[in-house]
Amino acid sequence: MKLDPTQAVILIPSLEPDERLPVYVRALLDEGFSHVVIVDDGSSEKYQDIFNRLAAMEGCSVVHHEVNKGKGVALKTGYAFIQKNLPDAMGVITADADGQHTVDDCWKLAQSLAEGKDELYLGSRDFNQSNVPPKSRYGNKITSLVFQLLYGQWLPDTQTGLRAFPASRLGFMQQVEGDRFEYEMNVLIACARAKMPMVPITIETIYEDDNAGTHFHPIRDSYRIYKVILGNFIKFMGASIVSFLLDNGVFALCENLIFAGLGDGREFLSSVVARLISAPCNFLMNKNFVFKAKSSKKAFMRYVILAVGLLLASAVGVELLMDLLHFSPALASIVKIVVDLVLYLVSYRVQNHWVFQEDETHA
Image 1 (tube, one colour):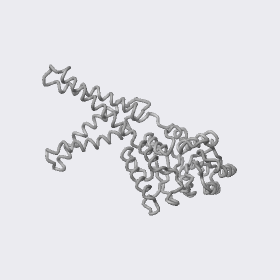
Image 2: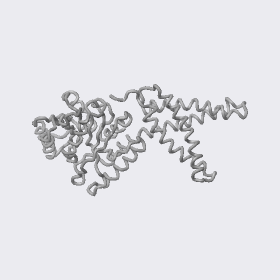
Image 3: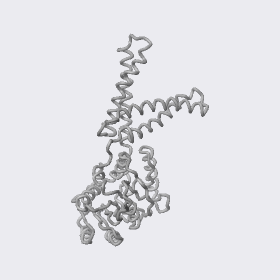
Image 4: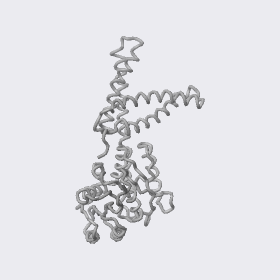
């Protein structure tokens, strides 16, 4: 049964807004949205008249932070307010206060929410348009590519602030880590891990005054975003390096001391013992440090299946490439490096989406 799109609550985090915000909120309410929630994220005293006028509008609630806490905290404050005070909310649409998101686009996401599906809708801008600042055009395209490589889904606009999700996901969204702009990237990663579908919806691409009204700091906030998007992969590489050193250390110890008197068979036994020690250690590091999985049910068996599959894929892949491309045997080592690098990225994605997937993902 189709839900009522007017029951989607609009949530707008705001820091030191201008006169466009009351006009925008008035237009949203006139469009038919039942409620708009504004979170004042520590704006100074001279901006309080704007918030007072907003609070006086029927259907608009204003929540205040005494000091600036960041966009992520502001969004979670709004989610908590909606969850506690607006039990009839069908879903939540987050929008920015700087004029980038039109009323028509908010309505477009509300209609998608009204389908009643457990999906995250992302208002996606067209970064090929001439009015898009170069830093936004190239920054978003690079981030989208990195996200696809690591998390397996192409999202044309990973940094959009116009998003919509059903009210049943309010608890889930409040559990996602992050205080500032990096929170929104954390949400995408959390949804990817939880296998919550993310659906891009084309919206208008508006950059007024070269996006001068934004509070996004290009260097500081880009660092925070990429720290999030690459953080797990860097930890994954760290766990791999530790496991590699452990594997080779145990192998050397066994070959030169423990099995030294066994003759030709000592290399095979040393390899087996080394792998039996390093593989479980790598599993535990990935489970507890990298992916932070709460449950290990079925995970170790999946890990073993993946390890065997990657071993076979490496051997077969090298052989196939050598035959298909008619490479010289002297290039076999280089081909193996390329194949194993590709499989390493595959391993990360499979462990992220399958091996350490929680048994219950809906929160």
